[in-house]
Length: 370
Length: 79
Figure (tube, each protein chain N blue to C red):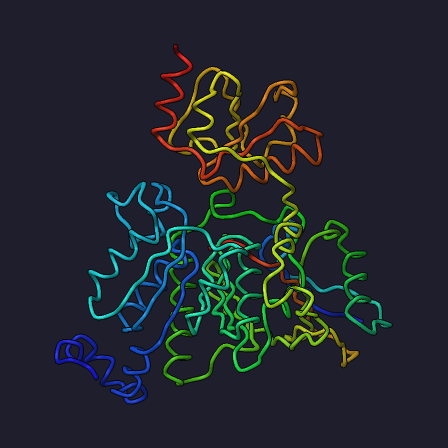
């Protein structure tokens, strides 16, 4: 049933013959989980919210940074520092109060993926790293859920729908997680704001088509969009019958080692901000963020080398001291630790969980001045 | 045999190449052979992750021996 207010809200969409009341009710009953509320996730969420998808989950452990705002235009200046799942839920509830939105303010991991995904019908992959993309794909194969995939690199974007009516999956496209250093993301390679906007909206379009059953779903096809040339290429994806999904699952659980090993992340020692502050005199900090990333953190006992340049400047990192490596969220610092441990035999490097914050800097400066 | 190579994403950047016509070995029977000849032609692709579409189809089997276009597609992580 739709209330009078809902009918008014969706009136222009109800006028579309292919949707009508029946299609709107299908949207209302649909359950969609969005992994990542960033460049792709924001525009996607805005459109599926406004279209009336009745139950939306948003999973993102990251918080809004000033450098996100040029493309993640769901957020504004007051959103800075707030968790993306929670903040996007607040913004979207104001856009459409007739739907249910649940915020999961943490990262999707092998440990929680099954629980997160099982109550949804469609999962939209708006993540920004390969490990999450493979984890989402594999979990959806295990639970027989549809994946609406989107990803971007500089001026290009890829879109497809995986595991739709037993169709091809992400591993039919790329069987194994990339192991080389092609894991650049927007903070390293740059991106123009409209590109994730275009790709996220294409994903939203697929979500609406899948739910309402109209048009042709982008299953078995990879769409590649180029913003500079304004071209769209389609490539047919055949199902890779040889890939052995069974080997990924043990007792209907994901074998989390697959994702950890495949990302070449070895065992990394981790400390939270308070643990580091409690013994601040024991540590030297290594900042692997890009030059100019905020908040700026300068002072004694801080070495600054962006992740991409780590290998060239590794000689300035002392081997005899305990090094706490940090970035914005704790992901790049993990990669830095892997390089230091595997390629340069450092055994004294520790990851700062969840990255840096203004409060941490303030406390660190206060403690190290004493 | 002559065919057109099309590059995408970081592959296009790495090779500084959008598209060009190349001469390809004629005795290619599967995707592994094709990958080998492409890496022989562009050695900097060694070790990179990419998938290959032959005449618009991403497949393990190469049925048509007359290949017109080869697209080299890397995965994108960004979002």
